[in-house]
Amino acid sequence: MNGPFFLPVRDIVRKPGEMREHRIDVTLANKWGEGIVTVEAGETLDIDVRLESVHEGILVSGTVDTTYTGVCGRCLTDITAPVEVEFQELFAYPGEEETDFEVQDDHVDLETLVRDAIVLSLPFQPVCQPDCLGLDPETGEKLTESTGAESDAPIDPRWSALRQITDQDDTAERRAAEKEES
Ligand SMILES: [Zn+2]
Image 1: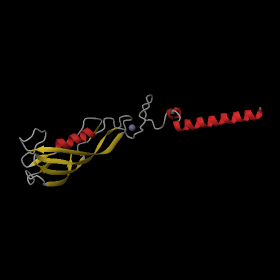
Image 2: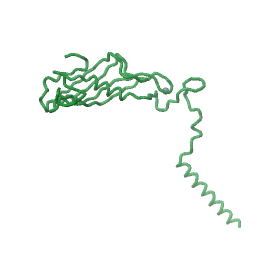
Image 3: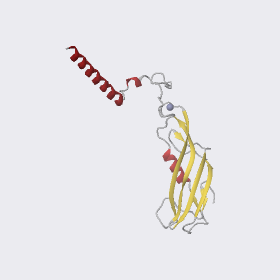
Image 4: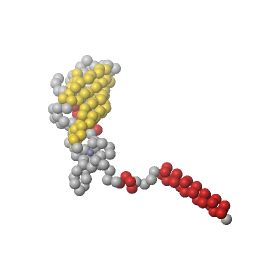
C-alpha cells in the first residue's frame, strides 16, 4: 500500500458498523485544475475523512481544505484564496456493485474523489474582490475608483416615494394658500 491518498481499511472491511477517522496532510505533486485559478504543485491539502464500513463497501466522507492561486478575471491581479469542500462516495467491494470507486485489497484511494471535489469548486470567473472594477479599456490600468456611473443610478424607490409625498404636501399647501387669498 502506498500513495499519498491511500487509506488503510483492512481492519473494517466486511464489518458493517465499524468506523475510522483520519486526518491527513498531502502535498500536491502536480497542480490541480486547468482554469485561471488552480491548486499549485507543492500546495498542502488538509483532509478530514471518515471511513464507515457498510454492507456494500466503505462509505468515505469528509472535507478538504486548501488554497488556490491565480489571477483576478477582471483586473489580472494575483489572487490567493482558501477553498474548503465536502466529499462523499461509496467505495464498493470488487464485483458487488457497478461503481467508479472500489475498495482495493486493503485500502481506498481518495485521490480522484478529492481532486474532482476541489477542481469542480474552483471559480470559473475569480475576482480579487466582489466589486473589482477591472481595467480601464483605454489605458489598461487597473481602475481604483468609480467612473461616475454611480451618480447616474436611479433614486432609491423609497426616496422617490418620499419625494412624491413632499410634492403632494407642497400642492396641498399651495391650494390652501390660494383659498385664503381668494
Ligand atoms: Zn480584480
